[in-house]
Amino acid sequence: MNIETFKDEAELKKCPIPFFDKFLRKTNDASAFGFFRMGNGPVLMSNVYLSAALITLAEKEIDCYYADDDIEHDQCGYVYGFKPSSLITNIGTMTGILSAFLVPFIGAVIDCTDHRRKLGVLAALTMIVIQAT
Image (cartoon, rainbow, N blue to C red):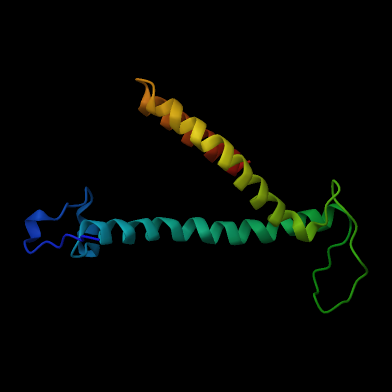
């Protein structure tokens, strides 16, 4: 694997926002990975928060939610045929299966048409709307 390091600061790509220039690394790939992780952190934390909220809402739906975790309660029932505790696992499974089938199709459509940007934006917005609802 050939990783190109730059000896001159002028060879590195600059950020459009000058404030972020202080986060640049010795290679463009390392800088890109760092910026990717900066953006990925809030997404991960929102998933942690929303996962707990979804499980709580599912437990409240079947009157199985207790704010005090020290109280032992009976076995919870089912919401739409699933236990509330398996809700996040089911969401992850369905997301993985749908992605495995749809992403290659969307990629092929984008690669074979002249409207790459429009279709890419539309696919991204669709995924955002699905995640937000």
